Amino acid sequence: MNTDCDLLVIGGGITGAGIALEAARRGLTVTLVEARDFAWGTSSRSSKLVHGGLRYLREGKPGLTRESVHERAVLMRDAPGLVEPQGFLMAHYGGRSPGRWLLGAGLAIYDAFAGVRSRRYHAADRAAWLAPHLGRAGLQGASTYLDAKTDDARLVLRVLQEARAHGARLMNYTRVESLVRDATGVCGARLQPEAGAAYALRARCVVNATGVWADGLRATLGAAPKLRPLRGSHLLLPLWRLPLAQAVAFMHPRDGRPVFAYPWVGVALVGTTDEDHAADLALEPGITRGEADYLFEALAWQFPSLALCDADVLSAYAGVRPVVASGRADPSKETRDHIVLDEAGLLTVTGGKLTTFRAIAVDALARLAPRLPAAGRSATGSIFAPVAKSAALAALPPALCERLIGRYGVAAEALVACAAPGELARICGTPTLWAELRYAAQAEQVQHLDDLLLRRTRLGLLLRHGAAEILPRVEQIARPLLGWDATRWRAEVARYLDIVQRCHALPREATPGLEHA
Image 1 (cartoon, rainbow, N blue to C red):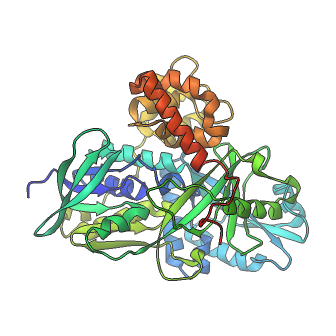
Image 2: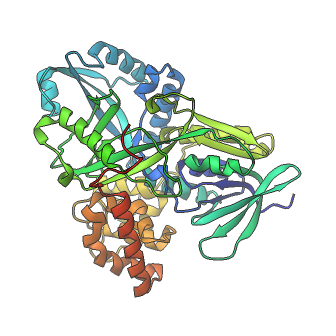
Image 3: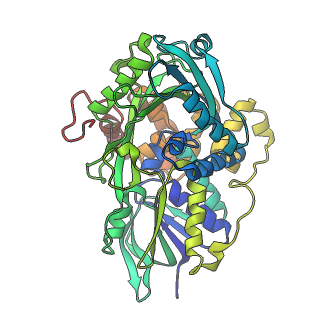
């Protein structure tokens, strides 16, 4: 067959990125295309946790927990500064679940899978010292344990960077118009870049890694839907309003769903909801008023002295999870397993979770091995290439050096080298350097302002009003590098601020048809 590549991956989230990397590591020629921006969908709107999943033990899925704990350990080993340990605390109250002994049993299994003991029990006075704003009424004590967190969008970009280093070709803002088929089945796709003419690309194998949009591509082959889109929404608050030294996990007082609040990139992140998402998947999701009220209700119960309200919120976001439908009434009871479907030569990989992206990729490639023998090879070594510290990196404070290497890998040196005077300083109120904006505009395929402020950096989430106050300096740095004239800049600002208002601000009124169940 006359082909342009061995493997065409459709979808630039964490699943597609992982498959592209693992395939490229095995010597396959890979092209990845993404209809919007890399990590535009669920992979930049997750709960940011790299976790083993205690809930899966309760649901009778120890295998998924074991796999998740293993993958968590691999990511913490291979990506320090990007995947970081996060302590969790769960308080115990009289008459409320989970009790000390039940949770302790689950944590013992968790630790056994990890091969390291992290769990501890603390009496009520110690629990109150560890988390001073906990509700005290009925407090009996608390259990603590270890998990991990990440910047999900930067994790996707780091995986894609590694894939490119192994020869993968990566294209964002390139939409699949249609699948190309021959007598053997799907053998490519007709692609439409945002700027440019459409063209056909042929491949020996095609993978549908479009997450919650996977059923749409499958439908063109006549396949029945498999997914139940579920929306998870989150709030970001200043740490001075919700002071947290570690994560606090608890059950919502209304329905017993798990809720958490933890320190993330200099702010407090609160989540999450679990709602059926009936809106058009082509529209960017946002939190509903009912979901915001649901999270405030949880915060008022767990941190009653803080009296948190809308005015405290820096930003909000919602992601739609590609959950495999099982017909259960309660969205929270649906499985988080992934599925791999081979239909008319199109391999669809969807479901699963951020933590297990590498294991999902290995599973997908194993299914491709009969058609692509190289896909069945074992790829040894770390997920990410080791980074030697240059003199410029070594001169930075150790924590900053680790952060930059974690997020940018071997490109960290180029980031430091491109910084203009004063740009290695942090942007006020965030851990982000001004130089990160310059590097992203220069080298990370930024096509729109929201790419720069919501995914390459997270400034649009960390600062009020989408970081509108710093846009004049962002313009000075990024506009010349992106080749935008003043007219284009004004159009990009208007587009970006509209996204911020629609998708990252709290709605004042109820959203018809999208309220909390």
